[in-house]
Amino acid sequence: MGVLDTDRRVFALAFARMADSLGNSFLIVVLPSYVASVVGEGGAEVAGASLSTTLLIGIVLSLFGFLNSGLQPLTGRLSDRFGRRRAFVLAGLAVLGVGSAGYPFADSYAALAGLRALQGIGAALTIPATVALVNEVGDAAERGGNFGVFNTFRLIGFGVGPLVAGGVKEAYGFDTAFAVAVVGAALGFLLVVLLVEDPTETRAAAADDVELSVTGDDTLLDPVFTLGVATVVMAMGIALFATLEGQINERLNQTTFLFGVQFGAAVLANVVFQIPIGNASDRYGRRLFVLGGLVLLIPSTLVQGFVTTSVGMIVARTVQGLAVALVFPVSLALAGDLAGEGQSGSTLSILTTGFGLGTAIGPLVSGVLAGIGYVAPFAFVAGLGVLALVLVYTQVSDPDAGDEPPEPAADPTPRE
Figure 1 (spheres, helix red, strand yellow):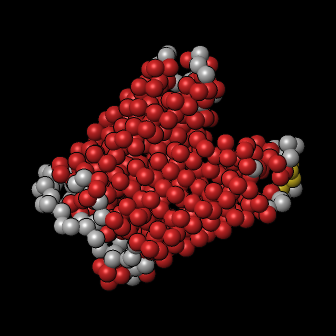
Figure 2 (cartoon, helix red, strand yellow):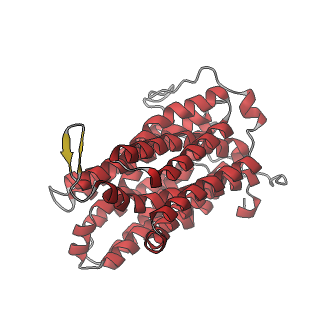
């Protein structure tokens, strides 16, 4: 399936997620300095405790991630029960936009924390329902390609936002930066309103009793839960890098610019390879690609603790980005293949929750283990990667075909 053959509804969801991701990534860059401007450099007293400005900023940023990840299984389950994905997506985008619009009026730390928590709830409403829609609006034979397109545009939005956020804030001020985030949510809302409807099958299959399990019927662990564990490890491997900026720059004797290039190399590789890998998984089966991604993830993560040149780190991060492109969109497609009728929201939320938890845990793990030694964070996550590889190899197979690839898809029908 070529990109231009993608269902227009998938494109609409992808562009909506790109616009929303761009707006949210603006906030990641802008909020730390805005929090500092509200509470001052001396910090503030919260619940009787005196907290530093740095810690207060960290709490605000973490609120979004932990609420987002923690609530996704619930919101995914509710979208299954009501069979109304679009309503959840629109509600979440509206909440995200309201939160961004409220920042210019927040004059206390409590207000800032409340707005960021509100946005975490908004993201939790939007993400599981969106990936469930991507799963349901296309054919199973095109599911990998659809998730490749969706994740590619999401990453483009998330990657572009930080590049321009600082410049917008410096040139036009905080209010304009927050306005960009509001516009991103509004544009996503409009695209979904105009171009996306719940499939009739989704409404008809609304599940009253959604059951998810850690254990499998024929395996020790449930295959989707296993893919969720692999997703946590994969996300940790990408996220631990940012915390170690100072140590990496010192070790490699490089500038912040080169660190940015290395950070971006993983994102760029992810963007470039997701669509062709997703399409290939539709043709040749999912499991092989997930296993291949984990095989690449292990050495590409570990070697980052040993490289001694900036070019070596760029290569390692590029391979790591390729590994993520092999694991994440294909895991989403495989989970979609395994999802019961009317259970896409609950099933896929396991993976989206895993990704959010991995990106939240990764920096914490690297911050703690870096005290043991420079190599320790990379070695720890690489070791978890070995465990994830063994689990996927033993607990996951392509549905309805054992380990055999599905038949190639027939020529697609004309798109709407």
